[in-house]
Structures are given as C-alpha cells and as structure tokens.
Image 1 (tube, rainbow, N blue to C red):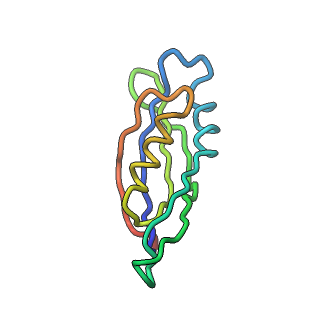
Image 2 (spheres, helix red, strand yellow):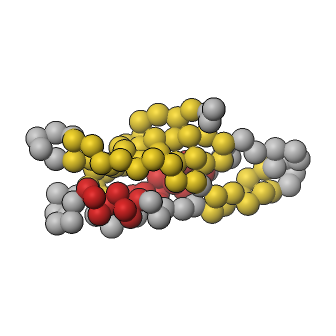
Length: 105
C-alpha cells in the first residue's frame, strides 16, 4: 500500500483561550488506525496508521493564527476521511480545510 502526504489548515476556535499553540500540540497526537488492501495482494487487508509530519503555527487573518498540519497517510479508501474526522474532533478546533496532497519523495 502506498502513502500520501496531506496538508490541512486548522483554525482554532475563537472561544479557545489557549490558542493556536495548544491546538498545535494536540494535533501532534492525532492518529488514525484502519485497514485497507495490501499493495501485494488486494484480497488481504493490512493495518495502517498515519504519521505526523510538520505542525506549524502561522499568521492567518486579522491578527489570528492557524495551524498548518502535515500527515502521511496510506493511499487506502477512507483514510483521508478518517483523518479529517479525527482532526475535527480535536478540542479547540473550529475548522479543518484541505490544502494539498502529494506523493512522498
């Protein structure tokens, strides 16, 4: 099973007193676990996990901050949906926006 590098903009909640730095720390702990077809034999399911890449706090608009979060996930059906759901469930997150996806080098 191949993998994909995926990038999201994560905007902290306006009501979150802790701010983008705390949300960034929480995003470092986001993981997904699932199963998908093996790259060697599609009839066999393999377990997969996501790997956390760069997590950066950046200036956004009107003096606010956003977190740019990069993850490596398997190229398996449902893995991107699972990651987006996990990101949206992080305490203090207001919006999660897909930015880019590509193959690892």
